[in-house]
Image (cartoon, rainbow, N blue to C red; front, side, top):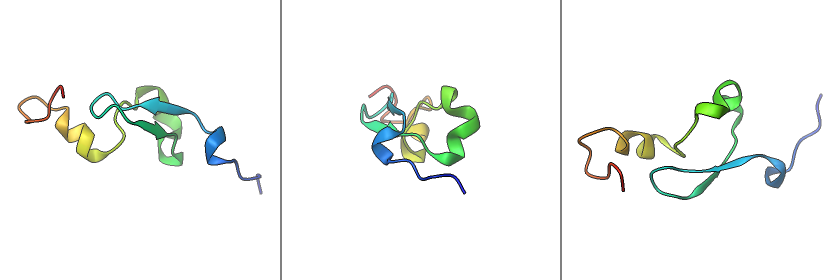
Length: 55
């Protein structure tokens, strides 16, 4: 079994909508390069016509 990594050792990015940093997650392992939003809420806000779009 592989050793656990500290959360501080994982890569981080800045969300394009809210501007907050977020940390790598296992479910994003194969698509980390394309992840730009920290949550479903920010991803929905990025859609055109949403009140928070481009905030």
